[in-house]
Image (cartoon, rainbow, N blue to C red; front, side):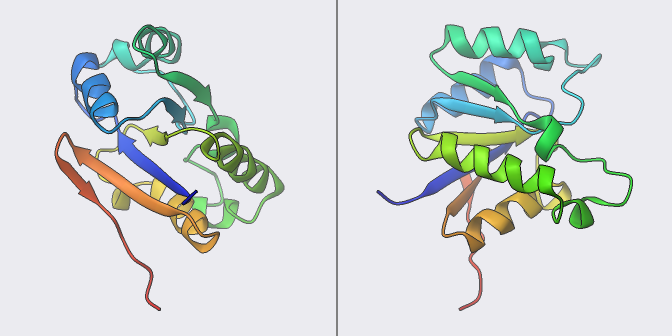
Amino acid sequence: MEKEIYTIGTSTRSLKDFIKILLSHGINVAVDVRRFPFSKRFPHFCKDTLALALKENGVAYFYLGNELGGLRKSGYERYTNSKEFREGIERLESIASTSKVTFFCCERLFFRCHRRFIAKILEKKGWKVYHIVDLNVIYREREED
């Protein structure tokens, strides 16, 4: 089985649109990599509310924001060398090895947030990473040979 994983940002989407996008790509597990999984502006993306809505639509929810979440004091790139980050990557790989997974944060575009660092590590480990931008828009960054 080919190792593939997706990323997405919640952005300003409605909950209905977010779930529609996940289901349209056959995603059955969503892994939250937000360090702080709460939103006053978009309460439907608060951890518990989102987890319940995803479950009701057949999508499992996992929270790995403690291990893989952004906003690190010394910078995220430096944080990627930590034991906690490596353990988070291993857990993400374990989840993705048996399911069609997306990991997500709130930034719409992966190259503007910490998902790019997670993706880069996964690609080095042999994963094909697909970045969902919108319903019919997916981007795949390929490493140079």
